[in-house]
Image (cartoon, rainbow, N blue to C red):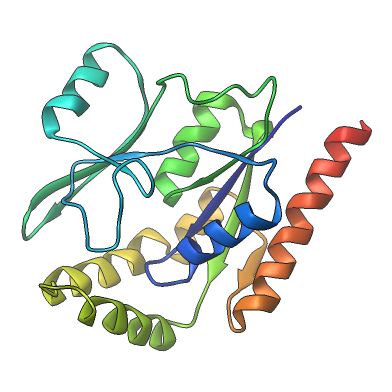
Length: 200
């Protein structure tokens, strides 16, 4: 049975870089590009990090009953929606996948595909270190959005609370104190799961 390896973590936990490095190390993993209605950030590319779409596209998928999961955030710049669409990108009969998302979207993926299909990979970083990383990244933007950074940082504390982690069954955490060590642990975990599937 092929798997969806679902990588999660608070903002600036290193999950984006982790995601890219995992794909370099395990190229047989397939990816799914998620959608968002938020504006594209400097350094991002449409169809790579996300498909950057207008609200109308989201409504169109909804009308066709093609939304796997969606979450909306009421930011100071308006409502930004992130969503996964059943748009023909996935074939679990043939491939394993690596996807990145939130705790909420992880739950929806489990509901849609079945709990046995989705393996959580939760990346954890101490909040002080995480805030420093977030500020450094935001300063590199042409127009830094510090208010949004603060909103997102505080929202993550709620979204990824211990109660919520326990509720969805997140047991193992990968501590991103040293990036390479954490990456090696995640890669080993994925390869072990893939080997178990191949051997069974």
